[in-house]
Length: 152
Image 1 (cartoon, rainbow, N blue to C red):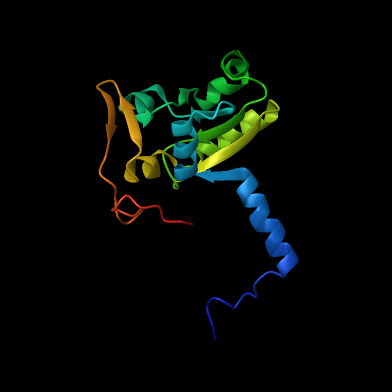
Image 2 (tube, one colour):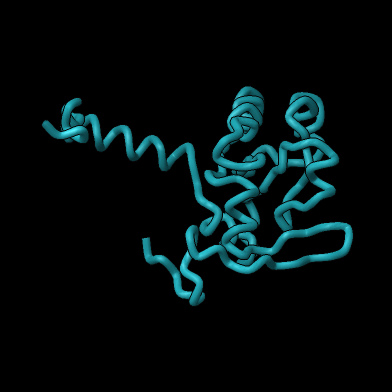
């Protein structure tokens, strides 16, 4: 018996709806990096972690707005027509999901950056610290090390 098919795959219509919905709720670090690099005006990346975490390092170009401050502070710093991308530490943390929920409550269009800050850093994208902007070496377990795109 197959471990994969011990629960039957979803019917095609359900699979189409599921995967289309996931893409409307999530984005990945490569797509966020591409938008930040090209200066897309209506995408705002938000780090929802604590001040200590932010200071340790964050996505270059992101805003810092901890989850507990979104309800009272978002409208002052993020345009109502923006698409907000939230992130937290990484795949083992649901902080970005909690932050995305807070933005959705305020009426913002919102996506969660899957992989979080962990994969941002591991894939060699710019990390900002108090010492400046650095790029960590690419972890070849998460991204091609040759600089080519994965073409996914």
